[in-house]
Image (cartoon, rainbow, N blue to C red):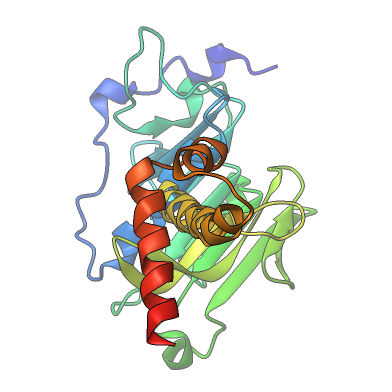
Length: 264
């Protein structure tokens, strides 16, 4: 149990900045964490015991000062409500106001300006006790002589790099890894969540597109059955009822079939 007396002299979230106001220098630093967040909202829509933030200051007591935050590109905390009491949003993530719960997963997206992801920030998250530290470096990994995607797990108080992608995290119940997805009509590399079978969770956009494609295929199959049923002696009206098509669609399909037969 966390004793709140330990934190009685520390500042409140109302007294602390929400971030360090450092601007990002590439699109991925905003896009990737936000994509993971919105996808998680879809996957865990029935749950209220998690919190994911993008570019938000994490205030803790394991650094040089509790007033100096570390600001990940994205982080996930488990075991806390998504909203604060009174349905209020968080201005920052203050560990001593969250019952001492530190983020379970932290994500850093490497940019053109090195930000200490492989040393300084790694040491901060390690000391803080973050279980999983993800470094995504899609553009500058060769410059940094690293891998494009690296996962570190806290084991016996120290980070150890893990292997496997997508990487399964049993404590979270998800895997994370790279993939390709269509977002906003653009086919691009993304980080995504995966299920226990390592199948990628599709975004709402992708699911809608998939459903539309399946609906088109199913309709084409019904239309393809129209001439066969007609030659079996069914009327256009009976075919429309049996296949769930409009009478106009049935007649159009029969006319197309007649035209094709005449050309032969």
